[in-house]
Length: 255
Length: 255
Image (cartoon, rainbow over the protein chains, first blue to last red):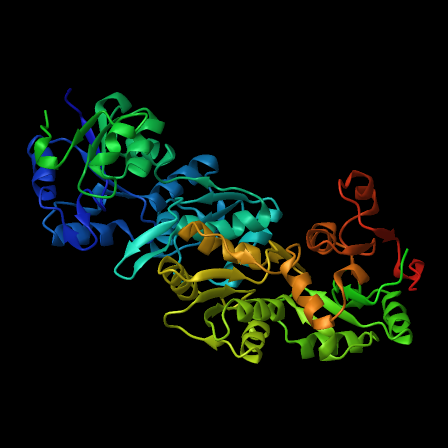
């Protein structure tokens, strides 16, 4: 155990489950605040703005401002800006993605574009998918917020962005660059925002295949908590283990 | 060369290219008619009714009635009826698929269903995809008209049914049973309709990977014509060759 100077904290399964707060979550965040340790909530959710995510957390008693939120859409916008300062983007996505791209000063267009950018879009149409395929066949690069194949809802598991994105991949034969967890890009972009060193930052999450794998891929220490998706029984079988694991966040001592 | 008692003839690339008739096509069909040899036009197109397909052919001077047309939607409806006489189906698709299922007396429903049936749908929505995923997770079987990943249009290659279907496959982890070419199911269903023996029927088409492969998979003789997608240069490299190949349909003698 060592002291960490920054925390990247997952949301669903770590801070809440759906619309229900995880009991130990508010205290965990309060302990970080007491020690003045900076933190970012790191979410693959691409559809919401940081304001909307932050509101939800505050309503659950988890301290957050919009500046504490870092979505896969925000990471995508920052990544694209690094590739090309004034990149033009054909966008499939909801308000969270459009908002993030605009905040980074990127152009959103229906015409010739540098990038096709896809995120979760519950208003998906054939025309949107067709335009994306045409642009990619004309040479646009293909970037997608995250590869989640299913999202949990009250109705059951519904198609996630990774599933929607597959229409374009299957039709054009081009795979996107995914930004969100388990890819390292979102972690690297989050570290830039948080301003802490990779060796002194901890990724916290419940999903081994997204949260913890993202930390492993980025070469950053990880804390796995068994309040969400991955069951404790899976731990012995994991080839690369998280740096730390706890049943609940109260068990973890913040140094 | 032997006399064939029935012909299964592809459309796009064999009878026409887009909206342009292939010069040798009307004569080929007329020669079949002169010899009273029954034929079916066999198309992966799932969106049109046989009436609409037949109208297009007649306008091009190719003799057809609706009874000469056999679409992947019609094959799917017949296949489903064989699985379960009064099967209930949740349907993603256009008029051609809805019409075909109704004509076979199958039930179309939004509620609990035996089958999720997907075909080309340019009015695709997230809700349709979500309902399909829920039904499949609840145990419905998954059947799709065809696996075409792209369809040629004046705007370029746009997503085909196989690409749209991938949303459901990726999200649920369940692969559909595909009915259309290159699968053998459409050929077997067409033989039932045409009423000729597999050993005395010939599949005619331009696309090695759909038309000819469907014939090979069904164990039926094939005639490949180089007026469409697969170029003549590919022929030497094909591991399993078509039974016959011609540059144009005029070169083929109907015995």
